[in-house]
Length: 161
Image 1 (cartoon, rainbow, N blue to C red):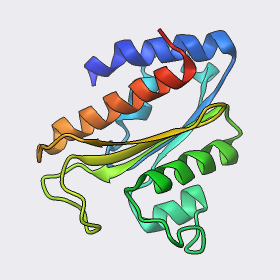
Image 2 (image 1 turned 180 degrees about the vertical axis):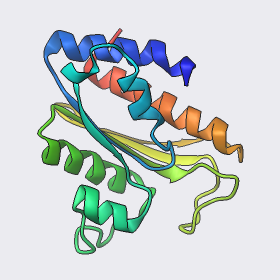
Image 3 (image 1 turned 90 degrees about the horizontal axis):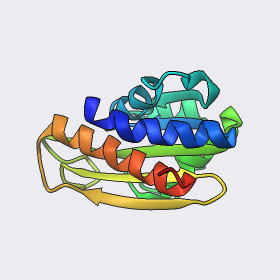
Image 4 (image 1 turned 30 degrees about the vertical axis):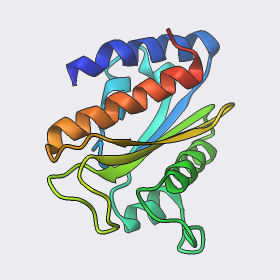
């Protein structure tokens, strides 16, 4: 996680400077996105909350995304990550929402995605969703890569340097 801290620090500084806030929902990153943002001193100024949304039950209870909301949307997809980011931002009343959902490994998920596949979305003044595929079955390395790319995407969206 230590390699995530410089980037998290840049994002934190930008959010503090602009008096903006963030909510996080992550699945296969397992909490590393939140942990990196929370490791920066002064996190209470910008980090409102986060959740590891790892199952359908968690999705319904924590993000209040119903089966009806999921019609036509497959988990571990860009539309799902965008919905999750938007819903967390709305529920927690933040400037930004960030969400990640994928398959860390060592095997793929039940939706047909290979290990190393994740979708990351940012919801806020600008919105973006991307797919990352590492091509690796290394669970820990994938979790790290997913968190790194999520923080990079948040830095890009907020203009953090």
